[in-house]
Image (cartoon, rainbow, N blue to C red; front, top):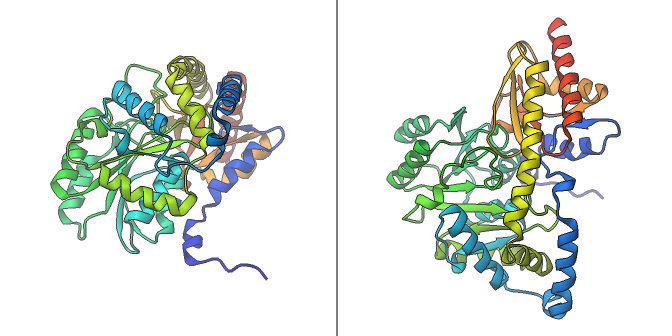
Length: 397
């Protein structure tokens, strides 16, 4: 007898998220869909050595249950990293190690959200965040974006008449998934000011913040937070290894303590072996050197995609120019339905994510998310060439 899924499951289901993983395995298809780190960016040999060392040094402790909040030295290393590189002051007691930043989102949902609550999100936004929030049967308040990120002025006008107020505002402020845009410094200050004025909290999801290829990213919103309004989410999945499943949450001590109670119920603690491997990678200074190396590789891929778009989609579409992260957002200027066109794109040998997957309601059908992280420049060139032909043929229909 089949299990009968709940309404929560039905609201959680998003076919686009499931299809991304399937598209990565299709033989002969160039995937510009998945936002995954490149295989050659994963420091497999270094991690293999570190795993052996930590097991040899303290095997039983590594393999035992551990503290819910996280491995103490890792908490200290993350605290130090945040202070040095992000100008975020967060003591180890204000950090919770999670099984990826995705778990941190779910922890906050379980901790804070009741059915019918309002959550403000960027439009478009990270599709799995939408799945998470929808699973708690909340109402989503979409705030549009432009090339400088969330239109905070629109949020301000909405808050002036909105009753009740949102439980929190969710933002991927740096190198956003899916658009690649970055919330500018002025709007970051304005967003924090609105949170303080209206008694709101901000969830700042910074999964891509360490992957800056041009200049410097604006300061983290959390670095300006003096009143505990911002919960900061970080991850090592995009930079060290998604398979280790190590992320973290930084918040005031009370919020961190409550989130730890929820985490204990979910999985007791994040993998002790994974935590110690990441701890050693950070503590020995390897992380900074590794970041410099992979940034160089990703910059070449980003430039390859932008050049290919200029060659093959000029006059057909407009697109973002991200300064970091993994994604370029493409909006076709003529008639085009990216969801309806996807099967034909795959048949021709290229995959992408339709734009509508990132919207709370109807929207984004003329748009698509492209990821440059997982393909080499030659495959990116060929994939964009196929895409240009597809869009031209679609317009002739």
